[in-house]
Image (cartoon, rainbow, N blue to C red; front, side):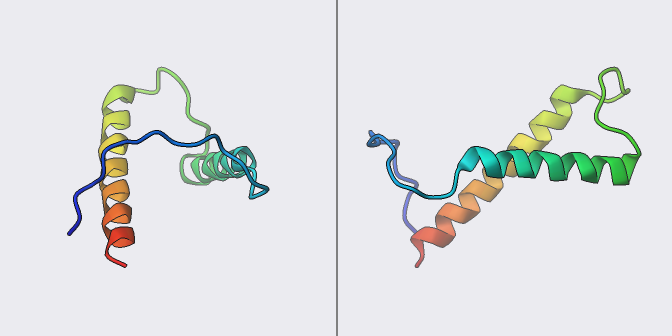
Length: 76
């Protein structure tokens, strides 16, 4: 297994690919719709949950997904 490479200088972005912001907006809208279906409401402040703990759990999951993707990409 290759080690995860250190960050390197990246060139300025170019090209005519998919607009990432459009996809992010789409994913946000979909996530809000999932919240409405599952909880019947959008995420609100003072909801009885610890937002920092929830965010920490999500961040740790993200690290796992990123590591998985790098391992899978580098094994090809």
